[in-house]
Length: 442
Ligand code: ADP
Ligand code: ASP
Ligand code: MG
Image 1: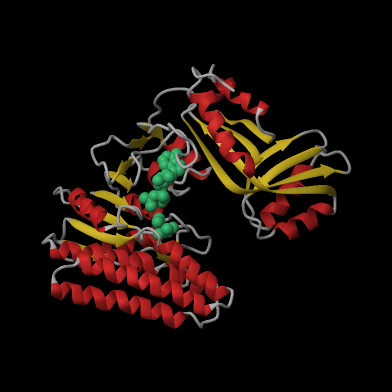
Image 2: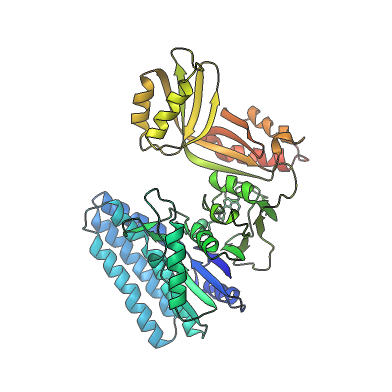
């Protein structure tokens, strides 16, 4: 069994959905996980933001525009009149439901209900397109088997039991289609796996079904050695280890949801990244094998807040760090980077929900400074801290102000904390220092 996930661009136009059909009709048994068509989830988020800020009339304008786009797409795509009628009724019922929600009081449950519609739409449309083309495929409703627990972790036992039950009850098929991203929470409400979560859906399903491979089909030919949105001449990496890709995804490489490889790495199930628009390109294969040496790739994560905690007494006195960490633990706030000196400790967080309360508590025994709009730039590769070429990266110290450096926390990762305003320059310069060291440095 294979699990193939297709992202927003892959299902975002008629041309690309035709490519998806070609890719999945190769005779192999598979679960196909679909994202929402590109732009849809962003539009749904916008709708919920307008509701939250008390502007239902603006929410209705976005709903209307989205409805028109979908109606145009299905008219051109679903040419069989009977199937078209079915799809038209479903799509317009979704938009009628959205319209009915705009005057409801805003809360997270309303948000979750709204953003779930994108994957429900794409899978309904695509499965009817397959039917029109004579491809037999069955729809597995994700809301009947995907569940997260009270700590927002996938409830693997529940998912396994229910997915297998639904597959057994569904007409036997070579292709099972399901929705990425969406799930239920522990109370049965509609929830999701956070933005970009369809990748995670695919590996959760891959793990519970013990798939032979999980394939993430997207709009680029694999994992690149730097962020192609900001840096020119980046290159696809043919092989990555689970650890390398986990670090890169966690530290901001948008191509993968941060938790993607976690469910499958324990079962040694490979993850292959492929380009829907260029299916013959090699892509990137992620396994437990380590290939190559030196720095493999660079990624950056925004939205980081740095907190410097200066002790009024001896910082590294016995028990001080324990006291600091206990505060972060109490407020369920994860720490990413940490550096210490004799009189201060600096650390970073990306969840600032409880920042004020944390600072109030720290202020009871320390002087606290907070800097926001920071980014972590992360360089990853097997055993890079020992590699002869690694020092090249420190030329970056001449160019931008580096607030923190984390070196040696693991052998495979070096992280720099910089101002977000310096991010693009940092990524571009590092590309030259690290990967194009033959070029003239300025
Ligand atoms: P999908 O909708 O298929 O899930 P995403 O937009 O989530 O696609 O991820 C693919 C995009 O990630 C690429 O188009 C690219 O702009 C961006 N990206 C950021 N960092 C990387 C990287 N290191 N390698 C490849 N793509 C990256
Ligand atoms: N549609 C969701 C999003 O845009 C999930 C995904 O694309 O993976 O975040
Ligand atoms: Mg994505």
